[in-house]
Image 1: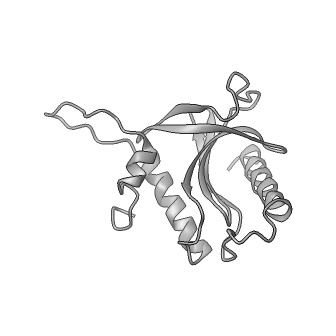
Image 2: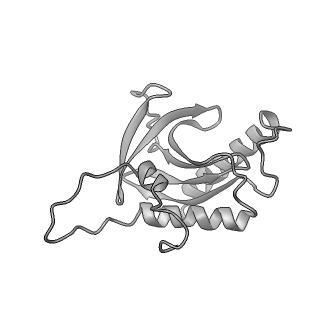
Image 3: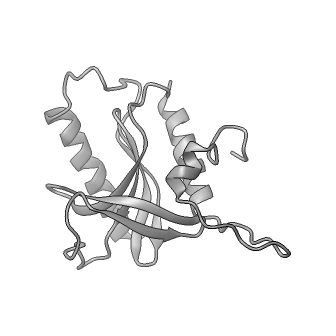
Length: 163
């Protein structure tokens, strides 16, 4: 792991720990069994992508390349980002100390997770599926690609499906 990647992950986790302490403190939505943790972050098409676990959400994040801040995108706007498994619709967000990033909510609230290990395992499984190209059928035309969020809701990432 590069020093730059370690610093990025540590900065991301630190910023969301501060959000937890300052803005989320005392809210009943928090799952006290969970901690802020960046899982599976890697470079894809010059962007840093991974899953962020917090006590209140699990989100897929796409951080821009160094020197880019998604300056041409409007906060709150939706954008398609292509992963090996297919396209995913993400929303542009911005946080002090982090800057701009694309995200998609995977789980919120986090009451379904009994432990950090369970949440991390789910995040790792999602990243594995997201970064694995879909097999192309040889004899049938390829169906229209569905966004990853829709696949998630239809059970692509459901337990017992290769995780």
